[in-house]
Amino acid sequence: MEGCKSNLMREMMLIVLCFCFMSNYAAGESDISKKEDVEISRLLKILNKPPVKTFTTKYGDIIDCIDIFKQPAFDHPLLKDHKIEVKPTFPREGMGSFTTPDNPWSEIERRKERCPLGAVPIRRTTKQELIFGSKYHWEKTKQRNSNTYPHTPMYHHFASIQPVEGKSYYGGHVIMGVHNPLVTPEQFSTSQMWIQNGPEEQINSIEAGLAVYPKLFGDNITRIFGYWTADGYKSTGCFNIFCPGFVQVHPSITFGELLEPVSVYKGKKYSIPVEVYKARASGNWLLSVGEQVIGYWPKELFTHLAHNASIIRYGGIAGALSGSPSPPMGNGHFPEYRDYDLAKAGFMREMKVFNEAGEIVYFDFTKAPRKLDTKKDNCYKLYYYSYISKPYTWNIITYGGPGGSSCP
Ligand SMILES: *[C@@H]1O[C@H](CO)[C@@H](O)[C@H](O)[C@H]1NC(C)=O
Ligand SMILES: *[C@@H]1O[C@H](CO)[C@@H](O)[C@H](O)[C@H]1NC(C)=O
Image (cartoon, rainbow, N blue to C red; front, side, top):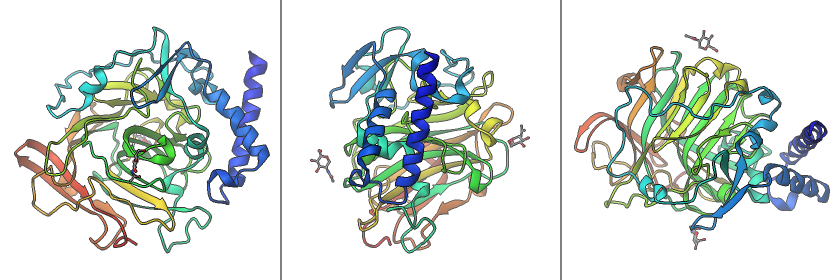
């Protein structure tokens, strides 16, 4: 077993080296040499551990049930002595009910399949997803016409809102609209929350929410995703469970879970609560979606996020390979100023933060700057409202846009 472990570490180092080399090129499969190809296949076998049970979802996803103590997270050297938090406390005290009538979760709860006691679900990864998801991120991508990251082929835009910076935060809560912007295989579009701390070049970041991301998931369905880095998106971290780190605890829901139905433009709206928060007792960063704790990012993974977060952000990212137009964000329609009809644009509502006292509170929207990387409103827009009466809700954003050629 011990020999096995060190062998594994050596292989993972090798892969990391390969990825460093690869990142000078487009991250397409065609750019991978025979040798790297062999190594990636081997890593794939390591990440896709022998399952105790396997089931297939109605969309054809293969879910492997892995012994909870043998899941990929524990191959991380910092988690060697990690004490697994098998039953994270949820619902939290004083939480009330966030259940929304337009919650698409019921579909998932109807699914009978779950892993046997002592096992957790891990979505089986394809080689392409692994290549992309383990070492690639939009923050490494560049904006068109910028030379910040000249070697990467992707660029992106974001539209977000951020409660006042510099305080100590212990998590974020949001009810996210569930949208399915139409993207091509070269594009991606997210609705997400950022939890961050530290200076830019070594920023610790946890990002989670919903994404349409063909390079990660192999299709254009809206799915749950997560991401972490502890060194400014350089060498630590990855999407989902594409590298050791995230500890899966939920017996049936994991990254890649798809959400349906999705909101219809000017029609029925669907939304789902998403939270990332620091568990008081353990200090781990828990991810809950639809009031279900999926799992957590252990505190050992982080430096600056070990104690608290200084930045919480909510919004969307839309990106594409250079040469492809910018994809739609939100539901693909521009929000209109003072249009309170949430069925017309991408929306998030009930945005809150976990404060130092351990309370979940609305933050002051008047002091929360909008953060958009496009100066002109011809690309993506974001409006915020402290309160609208129908539906009765607080701290709302409407955001997004069609992208396309108007969006350089
Ligand atoms: C989305 O996926 C479906 C099924 O694979 C495909 O038929 C459709 O063309 C895709 N849409 C886009 C915009 O790529
Ligand atoms: C929050 O985290 C920062 C950086 O890790 C630390 O310096 C600070 O003392 C923490 N604040 C509290 C209230 O724990």
